[in-house]
Length: 419
Ligand SMILES: Cc1ncc(COP(=O)(O)O)c(C=O)c1O
Image 1 (cartoon, rainbow, N blue to C red):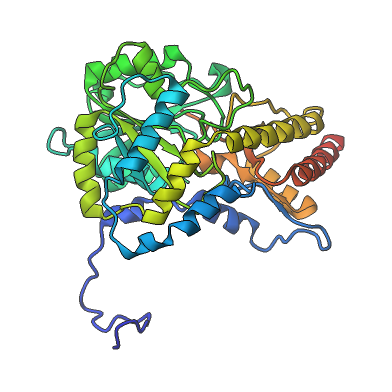
Image 2 (cartoon, helix red, strand yellow):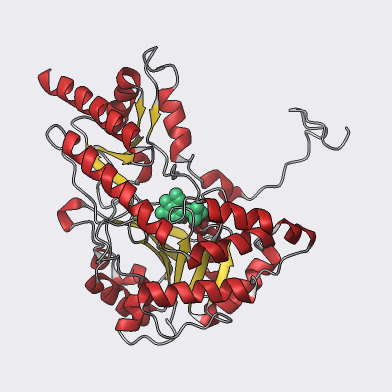
């Protein structure tokens, strides 16, 4: 058969295809589950669909970022280094210093640009997990959570352990719900602050306990902060992990890696640009891993990223738009739905009066508004799926569309109440 030609029938059916058996343990992605849920239930005709299920920013990309990108197209002519240009690492280190008041961050050893935080969050588990230290390593994930953590753990040959983030505890981790004998096997802990989907921002006390546990058991902390710039009070930005570490006197950020991104901050999800920063010893090995993985950032994207990290005006405006949308949507929804303003990020994590997939399906069918069932983002752990009877509503569309979606959800929820 010609290279590139495809056929369902293997030319050698007697030969078993070699694939990593752990791939079979990956769950289908929440959006895939949503597609299956909505199959055969199209929204009623004549109503414009409003998709609010995906966390893809829809505000326009700032013109200056596009301009810098196109001015640097000549960069395509050379291979980029995995570690990024010194200029980009300095721009990122400068941003970290300004944003978090972090005094000492070395752009050479404590910062690496990455192609969006997603690939980096996945790769960290592959670089960190050590099956020679313990036969059955554990990777801790929040619950509900961004699904990459779980897949990364499984493919690194570790078992995910889920710690529930529930409203009764203000979405804070219950670190002590994991028994000591399991903590001893933990090698990596993912946290997400501001959280997706809950919007919870980890306060200092939560960080303090996590750092204590890391000191005791030696695990690495992967702190996903890709929503750090979407918040409501200009005077009160979310506490970051590097900032918390510095305030607690943890010089050199031992066993801590922060993951950040331009995707939501600067409305460039397609640009694939972010960074990791923290413990230099871990980053050194992580860089080695990344060199082999081959995920260097394209030079024009590096140039555009430098411009983006250096500018805050567009980020302030971005926040204004989100604030407007939250105020509008919450005013419409609160009378009919159990929903609160989150600490930060751009999601509403609303309670549903019936099973969340059923709510989602019926809302989609009757109002052409698509949200994501909360249970798809969670796993059954400690006796519950903390996403049950919740939906995630991403306020990513324009203010007008979000307001229209909120009105349709209100009509749908009021109709349910009448029955
Ligand atoms: C919690 C969380 N982490 C990371 C990402 C990845 O973002 P990016 O790869 O665009 O930086 C997302 C994207 O939606 C997310 O929700």
